[in-house]
Amino acid sequence: MITWQTVLNIFEGVSSLFAVHPKLALARLGLIALGFLLMYLGRKGVLEALIMIPMGLGMSTINAAVMFFDPLNLHGGVGTLFVEPQAGATPDAIRNAADLMTILQIDWLQPIYTFTFSNGLIACLVFMGIGSLLDIGFILARPYTSMIIALCAELGTILTIPIATAFGFTTKQAAAIALVGGADGPMVLFSSLKLAPELFVPIAVVAYLYLGLTYGGYPYLVRALIPKRLRSLPMQPPKNQREFSSFEKMIVASVSCVVLSILLPVAAPLIFSLFLGIVIRESGIKAFQDLISGPVLYLSTLFLGLMLGVLCDANTIMDPKILPLLLLGCCALLLSGIGGILGGYLMYFVSGGKVNPVVGIAGVSCVPTTAKVAQKIVSKDNPSAVIMPAALGACISGVITTAIITGVVCSILGKLAN
Amino acid sequence: MSPIPLTLWTYALSIVFAMSVAAVIHGLGYFVKALRLDRNEAPPDASVPTADTEREQQALAVAIAVTHHAKRRPQS
Image (cartoon, rainbow over all chains, first blue to last red; front, side, top):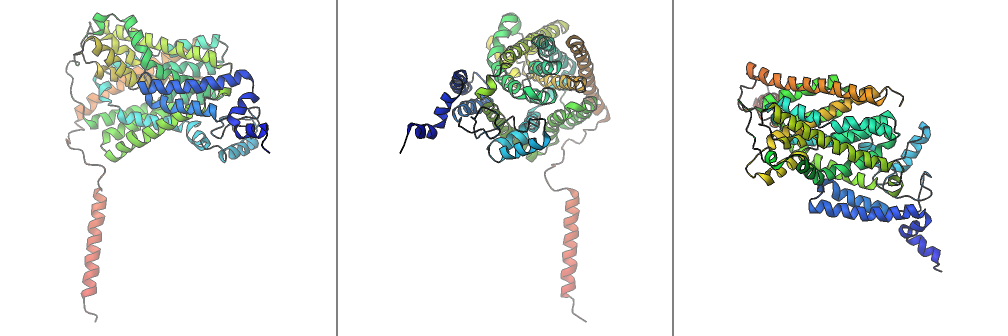
């Protein structure tokens, strides 16, 4: 005979809503709605579609597909068949291995999380793909200008460390959170794994949510801080600019990779991945370039977005540490944007009015989003002004400065207790 | 380490490293140009078989020819 209990057992996704605390149930419903909203905004082009569409669908589904299943007894009897980020997180190594093996045999996305996400491999693959799309010639044209702007655009990273410490986070956690200000997703994943693995999931989620928002939010910041007269300033190519051959770019990329790896071995996997992409692009091995800039980059980005979405279950999002993280992430990116614009102004004055200050926002290294945002803003005010080459130079330098800051912070804090 | 010295040290070291990288990039550009390391205009297509493979193919062709010739020789 079919009883009410039988019906509830069939529809576990619904009945599990009533089996948990009402706050958690409401959070699940809210996250389902938020997932749909992210997908809609991604589709509309307000947020970055490549991340937001898989992330939104993942977020909605993970909060819908909850059932009475908790093999590791971590979530009060409810769970999903997607992924368990806490598997293998106990201090006991033998239990860790057993738990991880159990979960690897149950959750369908666990192999991707364990073997590509939680060890930083996916970040390296994304970086390799980004590298294969970068033209280092834009930095070669203006190395000092690009690098100074990028350093200014790290203001958020630098200032958020003491601010996060004031919120009660340890120095390592504060540094991991502050690196959101570098606006470099793979770098944020990497540094949070190195410095604060216990905050890895919330930091990764917050970082990617906000990186999507830079696309929509930074134009308002630029318009608020730079008058129209300066926004429409056309930029000429630098004096005596010459063409850089592929061979030249390849040598510069190879030597820069080795120099940065000697200086910052902690960030060497990411640095190597980025420059490997650049070297492959310039070496003329078309088959490799097509592979890295196509299937590798897009597959990694798809799974990155999907993993971020399925990590947004109500248990993680309802963590009391999430609210300060949301505030600090927003603060870091806002300060970095302001710092970048100040860098743009600095170069405008130093160059005697030859550099459009809007280039500064591209120093925030969300490659190539911020460079595209900078050009879009300028084109709106002066359709004939082209700042894209300078903006891309600042953007690529931003990746390098973020890698440098990550390496410095990890090296300084790596050996400290907290 | 407290956050303020950490912040200052991080920024100072980052400025030094970033400007060193800029100097390396700037200097290498001139170095490559001065040595004319890129004087071969058309880089070889790295995706096609290399000279070694070609030699191997030639060696194989010779071996096949020798074997063929040996087969055609009348047995004594």
